[in-house]
Image (cartoon, rainbow, N blue to C red; front, side):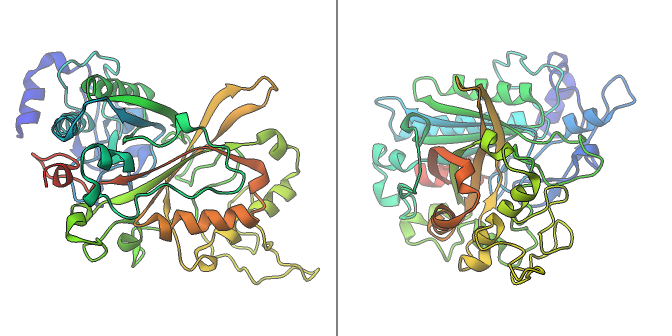
Length: 423
């Protein structure tokens, strides 16, 4: 038995928060969870009352914190997400940031495995880990502030402006980034609050975005998420089984541009965009028009050229009228890797809804989160093409933006970012 398990077994004060005992097996309605090292890991447990329900299994599921890559990248999307950008406090130096990253990593490692932490205020009392993941990143400004400019990757630079951007600087960028995801909202809040308290004197929150996705067990069978336009979203994501998945999503040793940047091997980049969906305008067009804009069936997610959701789109197919079945400006065509020199990224976005404006229109849309080995080979060329000729663009407005480098995962006893901050 590990020290953590022994402590948990004897510390009855922790039982109300972490009463689930993990055993290897299926994850019930939550399905298998992809861990930080890329393997499929799942735990299912029963509550002390016996006769566990599907939600008991969802609550007991854990995702490993330690591994070659950070968790929360290839992990299937959980039901809740909190994205945070942080600014360093004046005077915070490299030693202070290194100490913060160690505190954050140690705490995240315990929370994600359902272990108690010092100062637990019991916000999520009686809940299990609920597939909690905590992912950390660094902004370009951090390197200058800490005297690490020589170790900043060349790809970590401001994103270029795109047509029709309406970005709010106060909700963009940042020195540090955290993504906190779980299948329970109280678990995410508890983790956010814990990290925020640990950061006092070193970093303060610059912006926060709260997102949601489909809850495990909400559908009769596992399915791709739907966005707030009602469209199945994420069908054409790269898969871990793809032959070149790792080199498209993660920085390989061969791709690290200099010895000073070998610390990034196994890491990645994330592009974040807050994309408001102009839902009143979208709802003003009929379903057939909506499907032509996207290039897929709204009911099934199948390409308009035929088949099922995961069928390959036949972009050359024409209808009886001689017109392309999937139009030249349909979203799926404009964004497809075959029309973008093979560029791709792993999208892991969340919906958001922040009320209604004075005009009655919903402030709602997509917290776009995309992972890639190099934004100049992923997000940037695809977004440029979308901005020029995507039929979906008139229904969207980009309101916040950021890019961060995501260090590789860490081994037990280490912390995320250690090879950079102590190298």
